[in-house]
Image (cartoon, rainbow, N blue to C red):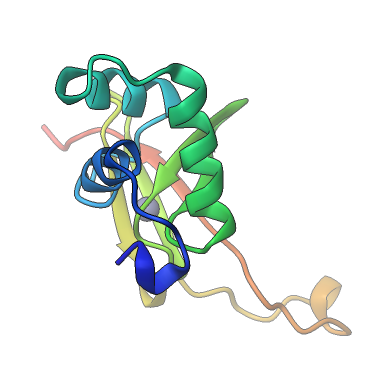
Length: 125
Ligand SMILES: [Zn+2]
């Protein structure tokens, strides 16, 4: 997969890819580093950050800002929305077609190319 995206595979890059491409958790760079370190204790924070940036640049993952000022990484690179459980902080992917924006006069002269909805809430009791 790395080769298909024009990325030279190194053991560290493979470790980062194995984690970030398989987790549904939308981890931050630090969370990726903590996790990869368990398998590759010598991997540096800078290597993980650089690897994540390389993966973003090559279209393997997508950065998302789901909470103010905090970037997380998403292996699901196609358009979709997110739901955040406020009780647990868990992030759920919501299919693109589950949310529709109806025409609004303020948008009449524009063609909306992209939008993303971030929903927040808690489990029903
Ligand atoms: Zn997502």
